[in-house]
Amino acid sequence: MSNPHSDALVFFGATGDLAFKKIFPSLHAMAKRGHLGVPVIGVAKANYTLDQLKERARASVEQHGGLDPAAFEKLCGLLRYVDGDYSDPATFQSIRQQLGSARQPAHYLAIPSAAFELVVEKLAESGCADNARVIIEKPFGHDLASAQELNRLLLGTFDERAIFRVDHYLGKTPVYNMVSFRFLNAFLEPIWNRTHVESVQITMAEAFGVQGRGAFYDQTGTIRDVIQNHLFQVLANLAMEPPVGTDSEAVRDEKVKVLKSTQPLTEADLVRGQFRGYRNEAGVQADSQVETFAALKLEIDSWRWKGVPFYVRAGKCLPVTCTEIVVRLRQLPTMYHGFDPKRNYLRFRISPDIAIAFGVNIMGTGDQTLSESVEIMASRHPGADEQDAYERVLGDAMDGDATLFARQDYVDEAWRIVDPVLKNAAPVHEYEPNTWGPSGVDQAILPPGGWANPMMAGAQERSGSA
Ligand code: BG6
Image (cartoon, rainbow, N blue to C red; front, side):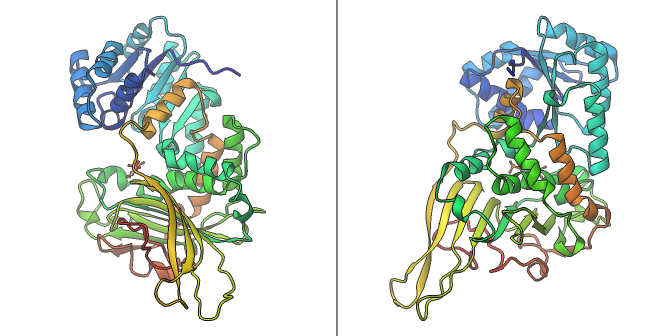
């Protein structure tokens, strides 16, 4: 089936935060690469003029990546603006007009999900949804039932193949490279299973707090904000079987299977924390029980992974900002007297730098009866010219390539796994900012060999026994 390129992009929420931080910079980068040649219609209710929107686009690009005069001029030449209320049919008539001869537009709903229903309904009534794609942002609902409800709403107007659910983590180079790394390298497959892997840890640490998003965060919490979506996508990339082809559905089928084999979370396998000071953030309830940290243990009951624990940990106000995965291999029986070989491991770093490293044992340089743990590593910092995750997913959605988007059955499965603990939330424990979560976390949820906290300087020395 051919996927025609969208012949216009309409983005709702044009004067909003997401547009400022991500969409304008991505459109500018696409223009710079010569990948943008269709009308771009911003929509918002802000009493803006087109010139004001261009000024906002300029400020956005200057603050997020830097402005290239030729690319910016190109973007401005394509930019249109419709100012209007989303409940007003006239707004959608104006969009229709601005679409001109475009027959296959993509509508990007960069707006709060509470407004999705209204916008989708009006897109349908005005004919703007005919032959169109729709791009939506997480959260896709706030639990299983609401996600299914959202989906029913979208499917009332759009075909599943025309719905692009953005999880920007999927657009990150090291996240999708993880899949190619696994399936392009012969040495990995023989050890990538329960016989050789002892445990897997996924850590997403952020050294900052809720950054003015208190009202949003207090409705959301860490599990909904980053674990159920971003980190489950990472988990699926690590654990999936080789797809039968490279088309989007073959890949997405395998990812769904991983989640289908994953047991629902129980309270016993979860620790929730909240950093001290969170309750003083604007928009946060004074007695909030929302977590800003969560550590959990998952089990994947598949032929490959049965019995291998997968640990997932994420939090705000932790000591570093870093997303990293550590796959520990089972320990060898000690063959040499006096040696204490550490577990071998494979480490993927997703951000801030990109790295793949193997932890290996070598003979110590000083005392020859001791082994030393060192890393063999390939790493780099993302280049200035590297496609940003948003640029990649926006381009893919306009190309109709769904590989890097969450399919509905996947979203449902992800909610199924976390739903039990969302309903019966485990107690939330306070932790000091700049620490690795509540003090008891490593007693309650303890990977064999302990948590491997990401180290930010040098790769030779690793904490604990990674
Ligand atoms: C977002 C979350 O989806 O992802 C944020 O809402 C989080 O809370 C962010 O900080 C992390 O993404 P990135 O790409 O900035 O690491």
